[in-house]
Length: 158
Image 1 (cartoon, helix red, strand yellow):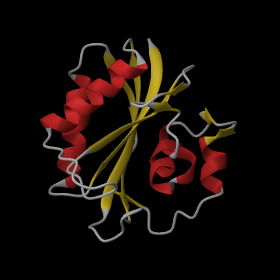
Image 2 (cartoon, one colour):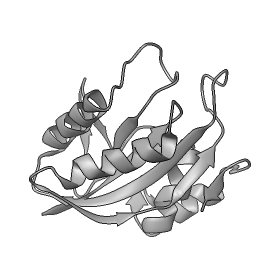
Image 3 (cartoon, helix red, strand yellow):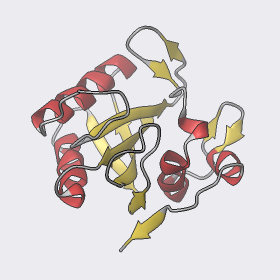
Image 4 (cartoon, helix red, strand yellow):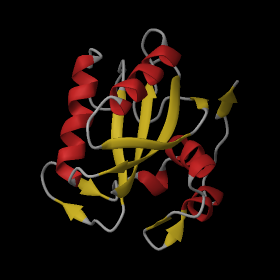
């Protein structure tokens, strides 16, 4: 089994329920075991800011799937939960990104690992730091990368 990290987000409908449903789908997938899950964080929209706030979380999983196999599972979970890709960085019922996959560096038309923007996005790093602050991505830990960013407006939801 290999450790991988996923970022989850939602800003349409019942965001808390969408994140929980996504994790339930992952748990039910053969070859995936959820090892840790962050709390949920209310975050301002990023990129396309003319939309509702997001709820974000991070999940550590152990898997025997390949990086591309894991991507396919994430895309199928998104589809099962009603994800429709209408505009880049736009509103979404669910988003599941493969952030890192232990020991893998991938760069092709379908997948880049580690995720190309993970160290630039506080809304990803805040929940990821809760479950994996010492994870090294791009030569620095998640905690070090987060310390360089402005996390204003990101708050844990109890």
